[in-house]
Length: 234
Image: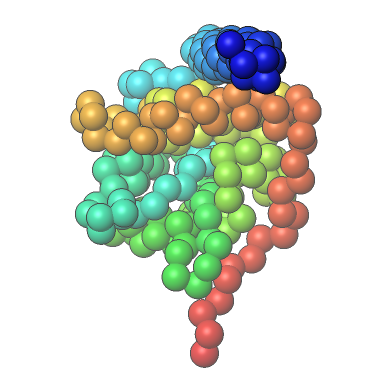
């Protein structure tokens, strides 16, 4: 055998071995990261739900009376342009709670990040159509996230004893934030959407709960202090 070729061949073997070891190490590390991440998500979800399970009500008759209800915002329409059932059922639940005397005043907290997108105004219009007077509503235009809505309810609108109104899966996260802020909060679960209606929303909520723990214990973001609306250009 040519000595030069033999030398090249022998040099290639260690390189191939090193390459295989690196690939195996990367695969193992990836598996560990994925497993650890999944465990953190699952444990975080269990922790948030477990610690708020006794604060969520499904029956209006059993729901205690509070002066103020905090209605968490969502878009009126889905991306396809169809009606968002989360929005519809949330507004119907809010109107019923007010008519039954379970809440007297409402803070409508949602996103108003452009002149064309205004969740608080959409909620107000929907509730007026359902028979709730606008005079009992306060609009929070800076409820960009659930964390913002809950913290601003206390810091900007000076409300600590509230009834949060949203779907069951959403209420747990809002209540956990409120508990950490020292609020005396309960929640009413609006009618849920049919199974399979929005898998994307449920997945997002599973990921949002670990993020809420980061917000509460580590990041501590500062929500807007004022309350203002993005005006349309004249």
